[in-house]
Length: 215
Image (cartoon, rainbow, N blue to C red; front, side):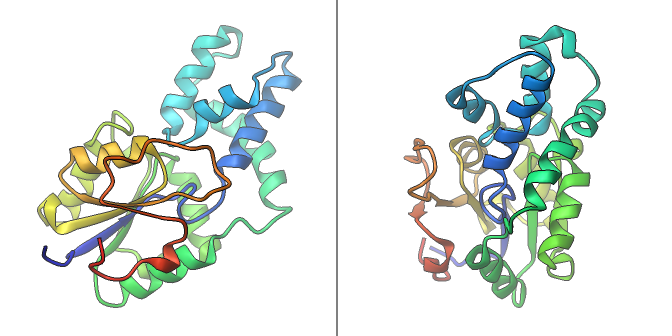
């Protein structure tokens, strides 16, 4: 199997440990508006899903909270920011791998978060100079598991999908990558909710274990 010509990284749960914070932020936001959502449902709402899809599900379930995608992000981000400012959510081994691969190959981020959130995370990690580009939920539709995001990434990289390798942490992201025709390495940390990664080419507990071409 030929070595990848480019690498695509998911963001939330792959480069930054943010999904657990989004779960808590959304729960707190809902509670302050008189609604509750159990942990299992909140995790299913957030993990591996685009912000556009999260917004759709919240406004469908709680119509009184209906507002635009951008307005809901503005409403919930302060809750998320309070949590993220209190802890370091960067994932050092994943970021180190991205920086190493970027020395010799094009690297991009393909995220379900908004471009605004992705850009802030890129600056927090100090990796802007390492990236060819990044994509957020505002750049494509529909969200993962649809392959639209990775088709767009391949087009912007000017490469066939088969020449790209994706790093993901969710079933939805894995399905998106494989449906686009890309190889996929999954980060499956033991402390996170179990998911079906049977489509992945390789499953690792830490991206420090990735060796070029090992998939």
